[in-house]
Amino acid sequence: MPEIYFPEEDSFLLSDVLKKEVPKILKKNPNPKILEIGSGSGFQVETLLSLGVHPKHITLTDINPDAFKFLKEKFKHSKVIHSNLFDKLNKKYDLIFFNPPYLPEDAREPKGSRLATTGGKSGSEVVKEFLKDAKNHLNPDGKIFLLTSSLTSGINWSKYNKKVLAKKKLFFEELVVWELSL
Image (cartoon, rainbow, N blue to C red; front, side, top):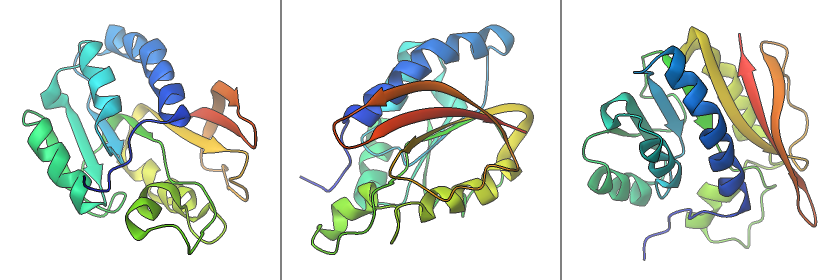
Protein backbone atom coordinates (compact mmCIF):
# COMPACT_ATOMS: atom_id res chain seq x y z
CA MET A 1 0.00 0.00 0.00
CA PRO A 2 1.39 3.43 -0.90
CA GLU A 3 2.22 5.90 1.89
CA ILE A 4 -0.93 8.07 1.87
CA TYR A 5 -2.45 9.88 4.85
CA PHE A 6 -5.81 8.32 5.65
CA PRO A 7 -8.44 9.98 7.87
CA GLU A 8 -7.77 10.42 11.56
CA GLU A 9 -9.42 12.63 14.23
CA ASP A 10 -8.17 15.82 12.57
CA SER A 11 -9.66 14.77 9.22
CA PHE A 12 -13.05 14.08 10.79
CA LEU A 13 -13.07 17.48 12.53
CA LEU A 14 -12.29 19.30 9.27
CA SER A 15 -14.94 17.24 7.45
CA ASP A 16 -17.53 18.29 10.04
CA VAL A 17 -16.61 21.93 9.42
CA LEU A 18 -16.94 21.47 5.65
CA LYS A 19 -20.38 19.89 6.11
CA LYS A 20 -21.50 22.91 8.13
CA GLU A 21 -19.82 25.74 6.20
CA VAL A 22 -19.79 24.70 2.52
CA PRO A 23 -23.61 24.81 2.15
CA LYS A 24 -23.44 28.48 3.26
CA ILE A 25 -20.78 29.15 0.62
CA LEU A 26 -22.86 27.37 -2.05
CA LYS A 27 -25.89 29.58 -1.25
CA LYS A 28 -23.83 32.68 -2.07
CA ASN A 29 -21.90 31.13 -4.96
CA PRO A 30 -23.18 27.89 -6.53
CA ASN A 31 -19.87 27.36 -8.37
CA PRO A 32 -17.08 28.26 -5.94
CA LYS A 33 -13.49 27.55 -6.89
CA ILE A 34 -12.18 25.30 -4.12
CA LEU A 35 -8.60 24.29 -3.40
CA GLU A 36 -7.46 21.61 -1.01
CA ILE A 37 -3.78 21.60 -0.12
CA GLY A 38 -2.52 18.18 0.96
CA SER A 39 -5.47 16.09 -0.25
CA GLY A 40 -3.99 12.73 0.82
CA SER A 41 -6.63 10.02 0.38
CA GLY A 42 -9.26 12.45 -0.95
CA PHE A 43 -11.45 12.11 2.14
CA GLN A 44 -12.35 15.82 2.21
CA VAL A 45 -13.07 15.85 -1.53
CA GLU A 46 -15.58 13.05 -0.96
CA THR A 47 -17.23 15.33 1.61
CA LEU A 48 -17.37 18.21 -0.90
CA LEU A 49 -18.86 15.97 -3.59
CA SER A 50 -21.51 14.71 -1.14
CA LEU A 51 -22.49 18.35 -0.53
CA GLY A 52 -23.08 18.95 -4.24
CA VAL A 53 -19.85 20.71 -5.19
CA HIS A 54 -19.15 19.98 -8.86
CA PRO A 55 -15.83 18.13 -9.28
CA LYS A 56 -14.64 20.53 -11.99
CA HIS A 57 -14.62 23.33 -9.38
CA ILE A 58 -12.28 21.42 -7.06
CA THR A 59 -8.48 21.50 -7.27
CA LEU A 60 -6.54 18.95 -5.23
CA THR A 61 -2.84 19.06 -4.45
CA ASP A 62 -0.36 16.87 -2.66
CA ILE A 63 3.41 16.87 -2.32
CA ASN A 64 3.47 13.07 -1.91
CA PRO A 65 3.90 11.33 -5.31
CA ASP A 66 1.90 8.29 -4.10
CA ALA A 67 -1.00 10.48 -3.02
CA PHE A 68 -0.83 12.44 -6.27
CA LYS A 69 -1.11 9.25 -8.35
CA PHE A 70 -3.92 7.94 -6.16
CA LEU A 71 -5.88 11.22 -6.39
CA LYS A 72 -5.34 11.55 -10.15
CA GLU A 73 -6.85 8.09 -10.65
CA LYS A 74 -9.72 8.54 -8.19
CA PHE A 75 -10.83 12.08 -9.06
CA LYS A 76 -10.65 12.20 -12.85
CA HIS A 77 -13.07 15.15 -13.13
CA SER A 78 -11.18 17.43 -10.73
CA LYS A 79 -7.84 19.11 -11.28
CA VAL A 80 -5.09 17.23 -9.43
CA ILE A 81 -1.66 18.85 -9.08
CA HIS A 82 1.58 17.42 -7.67
CA SER A 83 2.74 20.46 -5.70
CA ASN A 84 4.38 21.61 -2.49
CA LEU A 85 1.80 24.03 -1.10
CA PHE A 86 1.25 26.76 -3.75
CA ASP A 87 4.41 26.15 -5.82
CA LYS A 88 2.56 25.09 -8.99
CA LEU A 89 -0.59 27.16 -8.52
CA ASN A 90 -1.33 30.52 -10.07
CA LYS A 91 -5.11 30.91 -9.62
CA LYS A 92 -7.30 32.43 -6.93
CA TYR A 93 -9.93 30.48 -5.03
CA ASP A 94 -13.11 31.13 -3.06
CA LEU A 95 -12.22 28.48 -0.49
CA ILE A 96 -8.82 27.06 0.39
CA PHE A 97 -8.56 24.44 3.07
CA PHE A 98 -5.66 22.54 4.57
CA ASN A 99 -5.16 19.90 7.24
CA PRO A 100 -1.40 20.38 7.43
CA PRO A 101 1.24 18.21 8.97
CA TYR A 102 1.81 19.79 12.38
CA LEU A 103 3.80 17.39 14.53
CA PRO A 104 7.40 18.19 15.48
CA GLU A 105 10.00 16.23 13.55
CA ASP A 106 10.75 12.69 14.71
CA ALA A 107 13.63 11.10 12.78
CA ARG A 108 12.37 7.62 13.72
CA GLU A 109 9.18 8.09 11.70
CA PRO A 110 9.30 6.61 8.16
CA LYS A 111 9.88 9.22 5.44
CA GLY A 112 6.59 8.57 3.63
CA SER A 113 4.40 9.10 6.67
CA ARG A 114 6.58 12.06 7.76
CA LEU A 115 5.33 14.02 4.72
CA ALA A 116 1.80 13.73 6.07
CA THR A 117 2.41 14.28 9.78
CA THR A 118 5.58 16.31 10.36
CA GLY A 119 5.32 20.08 10.06
CA GLY A 120 9.06 20.68 10.36
CA LYS A 121 11.56 20.74 13.20
CA SER A 122 9.16 22.51 15.60
CA GLY A 123 5.97 21.36 13.86
CA SER A 124 4.86 24.81 12.68
CA GLU A 125 7.09 25.43 9.64
CA VAL A 126 4.60 24.06 7.08
CA VAL A 127 1.75 26.18 8.51
CA LYS A 128 3.95 29.29 8.48
CA GLU A 129 4.93 28.67 4.85
CA PHE A 130 1.28 28.08 3.90
CA LEU A 131 0.16 31.34 5.54
CA LYS A 132 2.88 33.35 3.76
CA ASP A 133 1.42 32.56 0.34
CA ALA A 134 -2.24 31.64 0.93
CA LYS A 135 -3.42 35.27 0.79
CA ASN A 136 -2.08 35.55 -2.78
CA HIS A 137 -4.38 32.72 -3.88
CA LEU A 138 -7.57 33.85 -2.16
CA ASN A 139 -10.35 35.79 -3.88
CA PRO A 140 -11.34 39.02 -2.05
CA ASP A 141 -14.35 37.45 -0.31
CA GLY A 142 -12.70 34.04 -0.01
CA LYS A 143 -12.13 31.95 3.07
CA ILE A 144 -9.42 29.66 4.33
CA PHE A 145 -10.18 26.76 6.67
CA LEU A 146 -6.97 25.75 8.42
CA LEU A 147 -6.59 23.04 11.02
CA THR A 148 -3.95 23.54 13.69
CA SER A 149 -3.00 21.81 16.91
CA SER A 150 -2.08 23.13 20.32
CA LEU A 151 1.29 21.57 19.42
CA THR A 152 1.60 24.18 16.63
CA SER A 153 3.13 27.37 18.03
CA GLY A 154 4.71 30.61 16.84
CA ILE A 155 2.17 31.34 14.09
CA ASN A 156 1.90 34.94 12.86
CA TRP A 157 -1.77 35.52 12.06
CA SER A 158 -1.40 39.28 11.46
CA LYS A 159 -2.25 39.18 7.72
CA TYR A 160 -5.62 37.51 8.37
CA ASN A 161 -8.91 37.97 10.16
CA LYS A 162 -9.54 34.76 12.07
CA LYS A 163 -12.22 32.99 14.01
CA VAL A 164 -12.57 29.52 15.49
CA LEU A 165 -14.98 27.23 13.63
CA ALA A 166 -14.44 24.06 15.67
CA LYS A 167 -12.32 22.59 18.47
CA LYS A 168 -11.67 19.07 19.67
CA LYS A 169 -9.66 18.02 22.72
CA LEU A 170 -7.61 14.87 22.39
CA PHE A 171 -5.54 13.29 25.13
CA PHE A 172 -2.31 15.19 24.32
CA GLU A 173 -3.47 18.12 22.19
CA GLU A 174 -6.39 20.30 21.14
CA LEU A 175 -7.29 20.58 17.47
CA VAL A 176 -8.71 23.84 16.12
CA VAL A 177 -10.20 24.64 12.72
CA TRP A 178 -9.80 28.34 11.92
CA GLU A 179 -11.62 30.42 9.35
CA LEU A 180 -9.24 32.98 7.90
CA SER A 181 -10.08 35.87 5.60
CA LEU A 182 -8.38 38.99 4.30
